[in-house]
Length: 219
Image 1 (tube, rainbow, N blue to C red):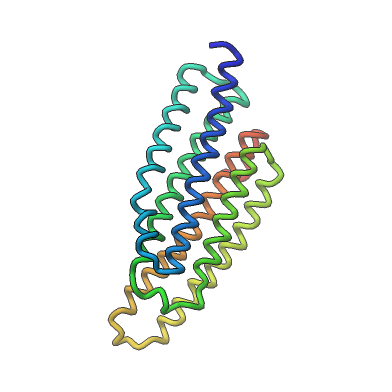
Image 2: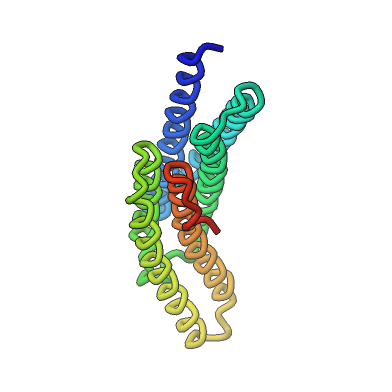
């Protein structure tokens, strides 16, 4: 394979990873909308569309394996391909979290904790993921540290939200049979939102490693 064709493969891999991130972020935003409105049809479309994200992941996994096996990239190219493979794994998992959120949107009990702003926290997490993907797209190592710092703020929001739910649980009527189910679902929702932020940090960490061979954010 000519050098130009090889570089074209690398370029196409980055573009395809970015396309997958666009699909995942769109699906997560739709899940947030379904959660906010209780739109069951919208929620179902997110759930049914998960197979598309899974297929994108499998296709890109194949591309990464082919590049590693046939082209045997070294140095910066090797870090790029390896990091891209890790990033699509994070994106696929965010797609799964979008499905979880869409499923929560179709269930009762969301109104019980109206003071927990799931949509606001969720929007902040998807914005963080989009920022991480922009850093990947532009090789912006400096932005990766900002993304990690912002995730600390999101973690704090999620911790406060969880405390609110637990505090109300302690004060609630123990005869309320629906209570434990609603509490469990809300805590799972908060946990899933926090995980989206964690995946954004993973993307940032892989980008920093890819660009500067810096493992600072890897964990």
